[in-house]
Length: 449
Image (tube, rainbow, N blue to C red):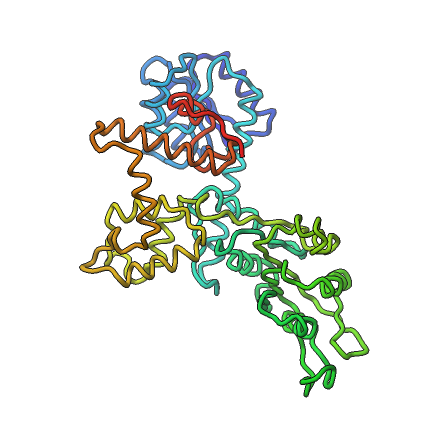
């Protein structure tokens, strides 16, 4: 990364610069605000380490000027006077994190490693978005949340390989879209993408559907027919709901994956196929393996790369963009009542993205007069809003209500993250240090799940 150190103490600048250069970073140093702003304008800075107490302008004032020039680089404040009011002031100005002096160099190293990973993920997301401009995906891939940006970054790297991919996620979370994305970003993008729903095929016809059959192989086989493996030759075969694959056929699928050859039902000769298999499931395959309902060797063969699709309740930052997407041509023509948007953002969506799409289509159909109101939403969504609202007193002052909402949101994210503070901070879009401050402020204990 390209780093900018802003500190009026020469010894501190030299110590940090030497340490960070040994870590492989390119480092620029400035003793004050004017010099720092000039370096910030001239160089593609990724992250600023900014001392708060310097002669002239303080750190929080400089942050605003940095953000006015380029809001993208991260800013980490360094201060020997850590306090909640200072932290709040700096975060409002645009700081991403802060470190207390004297600095713990190992903590600094870890924070920079995390920041660099986020930067690489964002670069991957930009590349993917460019590649998908004219893609045949059913609808655009929404990735405003950090969890979906991490997924896009992973998919971009996985797609380049020839190996099988196992996509896991809840019903309606977008596993098929991820599978199509893997195909579209791979070297096989010009080849076919064949989708097979393993839960929708009669068990007695499964083998013939996958591998094809010869004439007379079974009753009703009036002619020769190629199966899905042959149809996907040179491309990608997507096996959705792989957990529904019958046990006898799992052994044959394993053999086909290992040998890249298939034998039609009733045939005496095998044929080579060049197919990449992408599988998806909403079942817990490890539990199925332990219960002898899914072959362990097939599980590990399919799970060369594992992609977890987060449920919508863990990527609420995507909800507004998804609403606009599903409104389609009515975006801008149909306004969302604030209470309706509040209810949509708070609802947990057990049916995930698919449920949100159906919900928006229903509500848009019922809407009158250019407004989509809370009353246009299903009762279950309205009930969640009333439940959340009942926790606040309408007589409380506005600052108290805002704090109560913030505390409730932090509590929800901690619960979703199973009490893991690092994960909860990612879901909230704040640093772990800020999360710890707010947990102490609102007396929120660490939850375990």
